[in-house]
Amino acid sequence: MTHILAIDQGTTSSRAILFDAGLQVVASAQEEFTQHYPRPGWVEHDPSDLWSTVAATARAAMERAGVKADRIAAIGITNQRETTLIWDRASGQPIHPAIVWQDRRTADTCTALKDAGHEPMITERTGLLLDPYFSATKVKWLLDHVEGARARAEAGELAFGTVDSWLIWNLTGGRVHATDATNAARTMLYNISTGQWDAEICALMGVPMALLPEVKDCAADFGVTRADLFGREIPILGVAGDQQAATVGQACFAPGMMKSTYGTGCFALLNTGADRVPSTHRLLTTIAYQLDGKPTYALEGSIFIAGAVVQWLRDGLKIIRHASETQGLAEAAEEAQGVVLVPAFTGLGAPYWRPECRGAVYGLTRNSGPAELARAALESVGYQTRDLLEAMRADWGAAADGVLRVDGGMSASDFAMQFLSDILGAPVDRPRVTETTALGAAYLAGLQAGLCDAPEAFAQGWALERRFEPKMDEATRDAKYARWGRAVQATMSV
Image 1 (cartoon, rainbow, N blue to C red):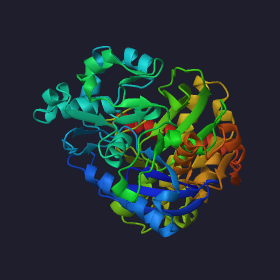
Image 2: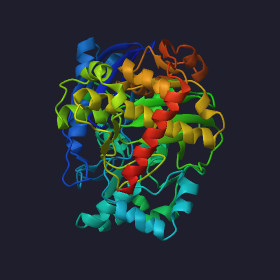
Image 3: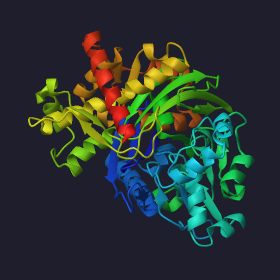
Image 4: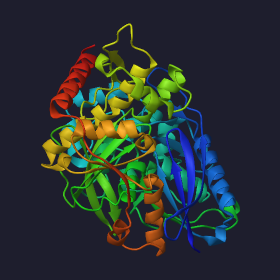
């Protein structure tokens, strides 16, 4: 058995990538699924879409490679985090559509909990801020709004999970209800110091502990798949939330190393080692990965809209047909116009945490057109990343002074990555393998299966594709960033 199957279940699509024992990509498959927006600020997924696209893409990747299940040593899973599902343990049927991490319906609940003085305790134990982003208030909403759900949960008839748990349940035919420490750490119900579900927070949220999955290391035994899915049982041996999997895939194993992933959102993580570093600048303290029962911690900054701003250009404004068109448009834009886009379509994430904010464009003139909007869209990602790294510098000394490793779909844009380097005033490294999220999941599964070496050896295999060095002079950098700051302040004041 010489192959590893990585399942990468994301916000807008599911992918399966088959790796060989050397962690080289053999074949892949991807399938998009429908996003549901039942009300302004609400975002849902059909749970059956999450499962069916995962099963279909896994089979497709195996078929394209001509690799049968008897050659696959393990499955690794990585997933969109915080997205919340509850299902019936007997039937396996969800009680409601999945509430996606972008969903803001519980903003009032979070405000009420803050006003009651609960945020300091929650932050101290979970490392998180009281925000609709996380799973806890989503679980509360489901139990409060689905008829009979709370009584059934208290009776032990229902199961809660983030997407990894939902996939594990379906892959194993309902035999395993589990998650890993990185996903548990994003629920706002898990104490990241004790490594346990927090009974006091669960009681505060009205979440019966009978709902909760077992928490395991990132490299661990998560059961085996049903034999009928792929032709034989395959062990599931690695699980990590998408940003933590990307941190592993980028080999950010040493304290002080940073990575930023540009998918639907943007997520920057700084490895802080065995030390939990509390943030005084509204970043998150979280678990980067957990091996052999020992968590490695990180500071994380989360931006809700990164690649999604390009989808807005395509699907909302319809000024492009393909994401690749933004590069040419941005290069053709009239830079002197100084158009600034604050893409707060679902609120502002770190370091602002303003869920009520909405997107805005500043500096429009009669000459502004698709090119200027495309440039502003790509630049918004660089500005938001600098916001995060400025906060990291303040929380952890020289954190933002080093090299930033990047990955994800938008990292393919040379314009966006050069602007990122320019506005940061720091090198930006793009690896040869930009599918670092799936690579991280595959490595964790391979590590548990005995196919992959220790993290130090894996790190030696990381390879650079291109380094972007800053070309912008300091005065221009400062002026542009100051303009961004004024735009954000104006957006928050509306």
